Image 1 (cartoon, chains in turn red, cyan):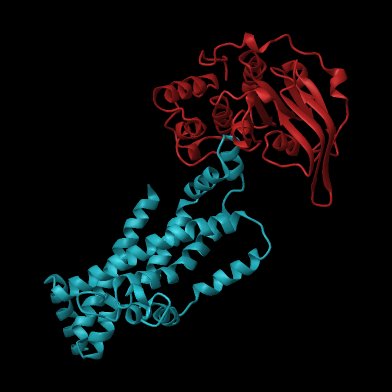
Image 2 (image 1 turned 90 degrees about the vertical axis):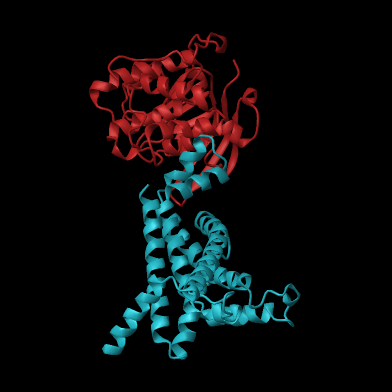
Length: 241
Length: 228
């Protein structure tokens, strides 16, 4: 199987104290990867680099050729949800519609996708709620919905469960672990060392900007082929979220 | 005191009688200042966003220059553009001197640094995540910049209000480039200066009242827009 993201000889310096250096990292389609490491280890920087938001000083981050296109088209297939996401001014619906409009998806299809995705993250009926009137947990879920509605090939999540209460955590993890069935590759950073096992995720350990393991040796791919992708619009509703 | 109150009452009479001269000066002021502020916004908003987002050699110098331009004396702008638009000047053949267009050009020069500087300040104060958020959702750098302007629209609106305030109340450019021609380039401010020097204090005061009211209504309108 061809990797969906391939990182080669990447090196990136930020100030005098931080550098990210990754010799070789291949991420395969429809897998879940959990990025663990201490604060400041380079998890967020690596995620931003994978999201093509940071250009490395040296080396390459290549996205599967099948996705094709220029940088913007590639970026449209890889969506990052930050640890404390920024919601755009306007309603929840406006936030979800933003990326859809950029992809030329409007009208009925846009509305359908927004409704089903909000349902998916347990925020059904909140379309018209102003983003600034949402609670911390709701902001996190809207940000996740805003990424999911775009049906990206790769979903990057920076500590997505940091603001989620223990009651919703189980449902949230159930949702994440089902995403590969819908064609999504998930890379999330986490401080919860038991979470990767719960998600069936492969571990990527990072320390001082360097990977601790040779991931290729650890890799055991989930038995999931792109052709087995399920229909997106069928709501991926998880009870309890 | 009697003189002042009598003049004030007379001024009010002129305002409510919709005096033709008053109306003409109000209209000229409004359309030249509006034209100038629209052009200033078209140039100043992108300039402020670009300066706020990009890092290049000489940026600091450019920002200092922009700050200095905010304090440009109106007569200096009037003088320089007078030289450019006068018959012997490089743009003399266009015949713009003493036309409303020349006034619009001068006022645009005055307002653009103000708009750009206010927008620059708003961009610097904006949430750093806006651009990355827009880009990770699939926006190009240009689309992300447009979204940034939408997110900081209060600051952008303040920039436009400040620029409009600067041009609607200025005399130097309007006088030097417009020539204070009755029915054509006479604005509220140039009319106030002229009428008061002729001893028509009440007329000047009437225009002063209108000028303040126009400024009040424009600001009320823009504030309403901000609250939407």
